[in-house]
Length: 111
Image (cartoon, rainbow, N blue to C red):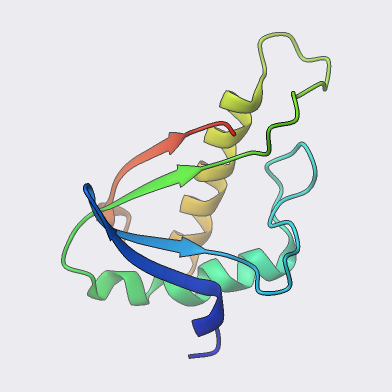
């Protein structure tokens, strides 16, 4: 209930989609990085255990903004960053009590 305004649920062709958004429109990660803001960690850990009640396995998608990644690291782009963010999210859901077996796939979708 504490995060009800930060969770959007709808049905897509792939199944039930659960989106986590920040109601204050703050970024969920550090700019250009996969390190989560503390409020993002709190949200993910709080809903982690609740996701065990969903009968299906989960697919988790990471996203970035459209700004080209320019850290200077060769071959590292928004594709890699979005995948790293998705994996960071997976780890926090598990830290919050979600069973590892609930996760079907983790993907990076870039911008």
